[in-house]
Amino acid sequence: GTRGLIASPPKAGKTLLLESIARGILADRPKTRVVVFLIDERPEEVTQFRRAVPAEVIASTNDQSPAEHVDLAEKMLAHLERELEVGNDVVVLLDSLTRMVRAFNHEGSGEGHLIEGVLERDTLEIPKRFFQLARQIEEGGSITLLATALIATGSNLDDLIYEEFRHQATTEIVLDRGLAEKRLFPAINVHLSGSSNEAKLLPSEVFEQNSILRRGLLDLNKGEALEVLLGEISET
Image 1 (cartoon, rainbow, N blue to C red):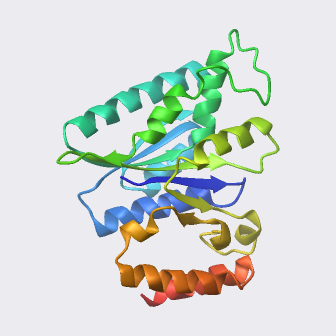
Image 2: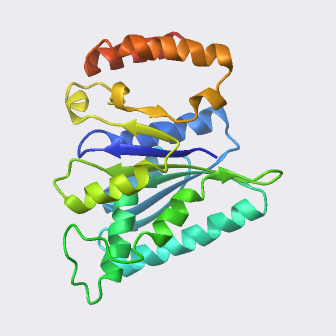
């Protein structure tokens, strides 16, 4: 039932990270239903996902209209709501919330007269329902959702979208283009990433160990911190 957000600037490796997460889940738990939902994506990226990841890939491409992106998002939301109601467990990897909101914003602007940096009324209703769907029902199913949001694009609208969703996430992973350019993968800014309910999810001893590690990482620059963290992970 985790609701996670991956905040990513351009060319920071978010697609590779999503592919890696999907493969990791399926390698550890082969029976898990993993759905990769790509919206307004480049056709070649969709093809790459389908080749690289043995998961369901549902996608709309950037040669389709905003209305088609909206229609697919609404159908996907309805499908996941039914899955939750009947007690199924689903992991959803969404790329991206930003493009989903942009599609709804375009459709809500009327005749396509979109003003950059302005969110139209009711634009966020369906995207927020989609993001908030991540939860576990007692004696029922669960939706675990990890979605990407675009940052540092130079767009005020993208910044608004990110701020709308970041406070609803229980986990946030912030990617860093500078780390990606140094060929550090995944290019996670350890200082800015974390979980709001880590203490509830982990045994007390593990949580304390993680807290000690995090305090130590804060004394390092972001590149050194990531290298230390990756080293710790490789040893476990």
